[in-house]
Image (cartoon, rainbow, N blue to C red; front, side, top):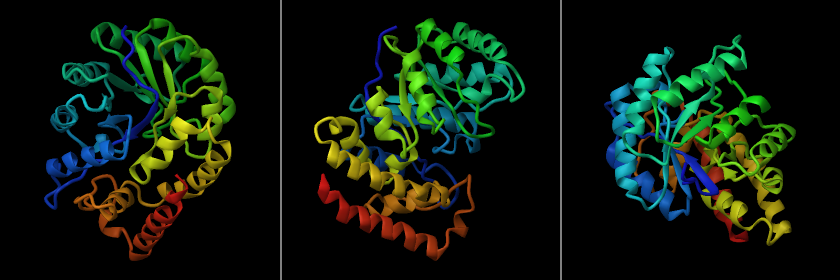
Length: 304
């Protein structure tokens, strides 16, 4: 399998909606241009941040197609949209995504086995998908919804040994587990991208390929600098890491509505309509907190 996944920052792309609750494609185009302008290395589209569990299959496929066409090779794109319960439905949605020729099709780890089922069941179901969706690089996303299934060392090794997997969005938020996973993927095509801001710098020191988290929708320049330059200036890297750790607490507050609001403050013309949350409940106090974070980063970014 040809390796197509670059190191660095892979943003979990948000989906703007119109007032009529339809996908706002002009807004999607604006967001893609903003990502490219800000130096993002890759886009993870049709993921949980994209509200994929609230999109129909037709919407998921059309959104992925639009992102790939708009990116137009300027920036690599991986896609998921892997939400269904039955294996047959999963194969249908993953095959539709693979037909669009993204850099990788990302499997959601909790879709391949129920909470009480073993890793052997996971591998059996994964093998069915590998056989049914040939010729495309695959990824894994430890999505927290509807439950978080973290990849064990055995599963990591199995995936790496297949030669089909190139991307893992890791959500364990545990530096010891990250260290073990990185060791299991050494000298394989499978790259690990940390989704947790607080452990990013330490994970980069251990050999993580980069960052794939929601905070790239707030201040991507920070994470881009960390991923590219942490070896050159550890003092500056630690200052940025400290800021990233505190700033990332905002993701606990009405995400992705707050990310859409923050992005609008940055000049991206999108609204706050959100399917996964009550966007009408995004309070003035919450807006003021996002405004303060935006202004704080404008002041702090001079460190770059």
